[in-house]
Length: 211
Image (spheres, rainbow, N blue to C red):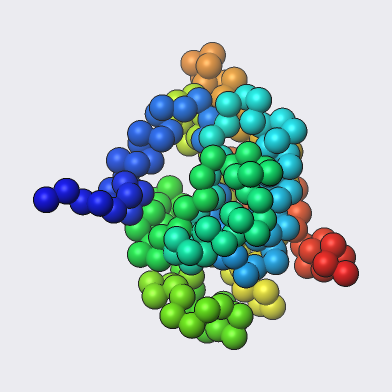
């Protein structure tokens, strides 16, 4: 009997290996859900830089959420991620298989999964969402066909519990390219952590745009 679940659910390790080894550049961005104003702000900001710069280099940019398939579809349609900003896919999996693998394999060792109550979003989300928890923002970037070059997990702190503050897209890409060039020359590299970079998507950034 065949397993009709997508590979990122049934075998996230195999999915990630095939994806990253088959492409020169891969970025996987974990977002909270279609209801999150901070996610919308950052994904569109990252998407604009993708259309302007990164897409031409062959980046495969993927968004993932633990809100599930319906939440991923809503975010994609409402925010224009694949249509307007060049995201390759927007994936949703409320089993959290990929997130669990990233933590267990120490790729994103400090990636946080919260209950809706812990994240202070119970009154915002659809009832029954996140049966296995809300995975907070994070990202992994690969270059040179499978080498991890950048990783980042959000700090889940009061008062916004994981919503704001993400690495600036331009700085992120510069670090990815720097490590890719080093790998091309045969040099050893260590992945950079996104917290070392300039940050954007502060509450001020997001609320000013909304106002």
